[in-house]
Image (cartoon, rainbow, N blue to C red; front, side, top):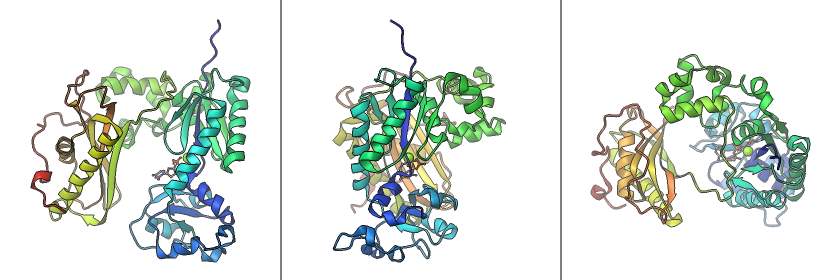
Length: 417
Ligand code: DCP
Ligand code: MG
């Protein structure tokens, strides 16, 4: 039996939330539109009693101009991106860049409906699909009928056509020998594009890219690499693996080396398990760790309780506890700690998250706080509190802290809300 070459596709919808909105309001096609913020009174016009959404005149749509508030953009149409607007940007900043852009509120239910629709189309053709979130999936083309034709191009075209026909939405697809390269490739010809990356294309197509383009290299690693003069994937590939292990720890160091050489053996997993669960909140006003200690502590505790409840409801335990904060200057930092036991208990999560918080500077005011629990396992597979088999790993640079104190008062001391 000859084994077929591995062909893995990564498919990602184009400007997903915005494109779904444009299906309702086709008169906005080609215009700068951003999706974000809560529903406001100005948005009421967008739901006329007679349902004629496509007849709402352009000048009835709310604009970014004069926006005051703390909302953040989830996504923007490609026309809006030309003004420098993009995901995660504050709406007030976007309003300065393009005051005439149309601002629509988010409608998650509708996006989830379209998410199910486009994934059904893929599953009808290629059953080996891994869900990666609301608008992206990996698909194993290897053994699918027609999956090897033109190195995957033919099947990618068929999928694009099927999704367009059933949803009216476009997507971009990358096909490569593995998930790592496919994920990068799907961005190459966005929107509505297909890109093929073969093993021989590594040097020409992948190596010139900045390290950040590797899914798994975050801003902190990138910063550290840049400080060492490593900007491109080619430069990363040329690094001595021993040096990478020294700098980033053994397993991540080795992974960096493999990734830079385009190597990735991960299978496409059809029963995709959640990787982490998190809760975050943007405050109504920026809070200070000292002046607003009680309020922050209460929010922090509530977030831990919410994540814990999510874990219990979905039947998971986790052992990597992390926090995310965003300062008033929009800089974000994250910290995490991997414990040697799995947990779903709000007090335990609170304690570990509190330790993480101690490792970030808290002299600036905060606009956002988040709590995440990762390294998940199904609770029924691992009794809670049971030590993990692998030794604890700590991603912090400070390895000398004791897991005892938490920064904010623990929930036991807190006033009921
Ligand atoms: N999203 C969000 N907040 C972010 C990033 C994304 O709410 N910081 C949401 C809105 C996006 C969707 O997730 O529509 C998918 O994210 P993508 O990164 O795939 O972005 P888009 O699909 O919008 O655009 P692209 O065409 O670049 O994929
Ligand atoms: Mg997308």
